[in-house]
Length: 291
Image 1: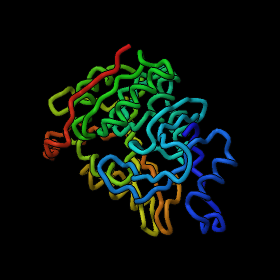
Image 2 (image 1 turned 90 degrees about the vertical axis):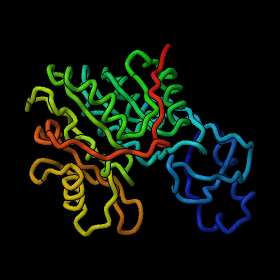
Image 3 (image 1 turned 180 degrees about the horizontal axis):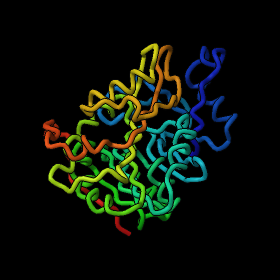
C-alpha cells in the first residue's frame, strides 16, 4: 500500500466481484499496490479495523503525506483517517514556537509531529503498542526526535503521570500549554483526570493548559451537548468558558465536535482529586524515543 487514497467506490463498481473492484482501483491509482476492504467498524480498544485484501500484494504498510508531513504505518493495526487533515492543521496552527503540547491519544503522530515541526516541545502518548511503535518511527522519519517524547500509557495514566509531573514547572513560564485529546468515542470521560491534578501545588490562574477534547454528539444542539458532557466529567460548569467547534459529520445525525477550554484553576488545584482507577491490563510502561 504505497499510498492511502481511502476511496469510496461507486455503486456500479461496488456490485462487481471484490477482486474486480480491487484491481480497478489499482489500475486507476498507479501509486497503490494493495486494496483492502474494512470488514467491521471500529470496535476494539485500539481503534483499528479488520481488513481483507481485495487485490494486489498483502502489504498493509502505508506511506502518506498530510499537510507536508510524511507518515508510515501498518494501516491494519493503527487508526488513520485522512478526513481529519484539516482539523489537524487547524489545531496545530494554534501552537506557537516554544509551546508545550501533551497529546493524550496521539496515534501515529498527526498532531504531535506537525506541532514539533513548528517548534513546540511535545509529549505524545498512545495505548496501542503498534501506534506507539509507528509514532516513534514517524518522529525519527521527520527528524523531530529531539522535540518529541513518546509514551505507551493509558490516557488517564498519562495525564496523572507525565502531564502532572511537567505542569508545575510549565505554569511558572509564559509558554503556552496545549492538551490534545482526540479519541472522540471516549475522550470526554477522561476529563475527570484533571480534577485535583495539582492538588498541593501553589495555585495560579495564569497560563492554564488549553484542552482540545473531541467527542461525538447526536443531540439537536451538539455544541450545548458537548459543553454539558465536558462540564459533567470535569465536575465544573464550562458555560461561557469554552468554545465548541464542528469537525465533521460522521453519520446521519452524528457529528464529531471539539470542545476547547482552559482547565479552570478550581479543577486543576482542587483537593477532591480523580478517584478513578484504570484496570491493570490497560496500563503500559512508559517509553521514550531516543536517537
